Length: 401
Image 1 (cartoon, rainbow, N blue to C red):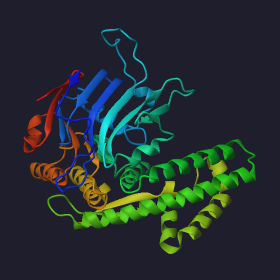
Image 2: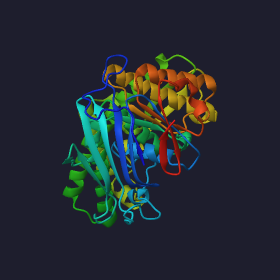
Image 3: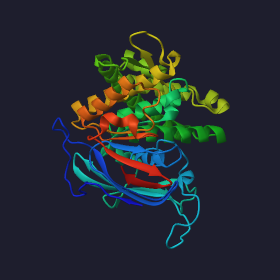
Image 4: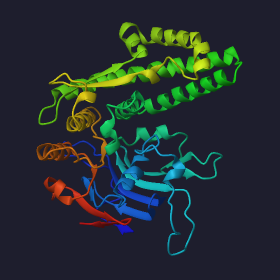
């Protein structure tokens, strides 16, 4: 499949309506990715609308883009699950292999080439390879330094009713937009936490080794909690300042570590977390759970006008609250970093009435966001006619509309 538009891969930067740089994915190439044996899509910086029946492969394209950021993509699938299944790819009849994604993106520093995919030769088969401008990258966290991506998927419609882990991941992705180093600190904290849990489980553990891991957990953990706390406060203010048909959202961060940062300096909070981790060794070994740390915090969202917790709101209001938070994020990034994030909005029109759909599209255009939107019918995106690029997706093929 080959679809080409008006993108120039040599463009140095893309200007948004406000004069700031516009982050954008200009070229996307897939190999053995989900239902695609090989695909290449070229677009420009405007919003991209993908329409077609359920199961046509629209979300797969968004998932491929999501791998241009740290993490496991918008589906959080195991890497091997992303490999193409099915008959060999014509014309050579090669056996499907490990998936690969390559992209040209417009960034504030100019055009960038990103390549990533599953390392089938790694011991677990679950290692992700990454190259940026042809050079190997040591960690996925490097992606956050170049491209900011946020997304909304149908599975996130239940974000407020799930356990706290998905909300922390949602918040962390928002933090990446302001603090790219946050991705590396989250990774370092989680790795130290896993190693400590393994030592406690296998025991008896060397106290010096445990102490070194707890030192790393305290250092990175307080930095993670502080960054989450700061961005939550800024988003709360931005959401309250918003107007239009989307409800204002009240955001707060809860948790023992987060509360300590309200009461003491960061260094004192770090020392206290280190002390608490040491004191919890026995109970953590017995339970198999790390009982203290920022991984136990939570993002709390309320409907500002009614004061009702988001989890108790209707499905439509929960979706509207999520959209309101993402739009607040885009406004803040456009203002403070001079570049709004690339937004992946899968089936975003579901549970939004006509007024809210029109308001969403108007704000995306006003902010100069490159949004990738999916839906079953083109008519749902009528307000974007003339301002967006439309493609039909069916049976693993993509064609301009």
